Image (cartoon, rainbow, N blue to C red; front, side):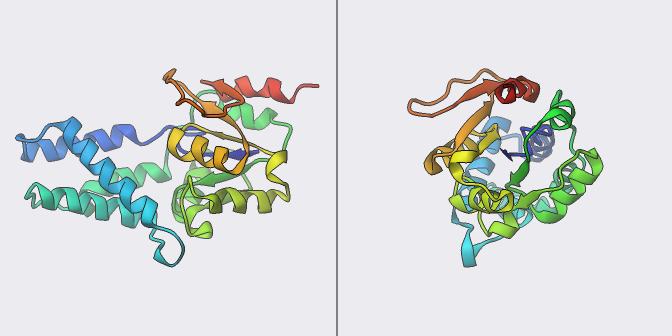
Length: 219
């Protein structure tokens, strides 16, 4: 199994992002929080897409660079590094999603985490959660981010398996589902919010709790 981490095994950093945006709005009330969040997300996503191979940059670099651009565009003197401190701290000490620990304890197949995150943060997060995840690939090893193929391919090599022999489990339509679909890897979608999948998405199973996937491995 290939397994996403943030948003799948542990909770995403949404609350810390919203807190950062609220801090910016306090200084710049002429801009709405939803607009600022969209602008930051758009800048970050664009940098993520461009970051691969010799142009690879760590997620922390991309987070600060994208926030710097947003602050510059609105004429803000706020410090992007200071604003990002709580987000970076959360990356290293995330909350485990309900059912994740029980699923990992009961999962009968080898698991490799593939995550769009920096190695130092992934190692710290796994140490913090004490989850049994000895096999992990961070974006720095692959020099790219999902949905590009490199992280998936690195995970396959780590497991010693072919793409037809694995299941990828993740929560992101744009990185997990799209990336696995492009490689012909079976996918399970962690869909807690009951979103609607785009037409053409190939999803073997949907769940809100990872424990719901254990039935896939029953004889």
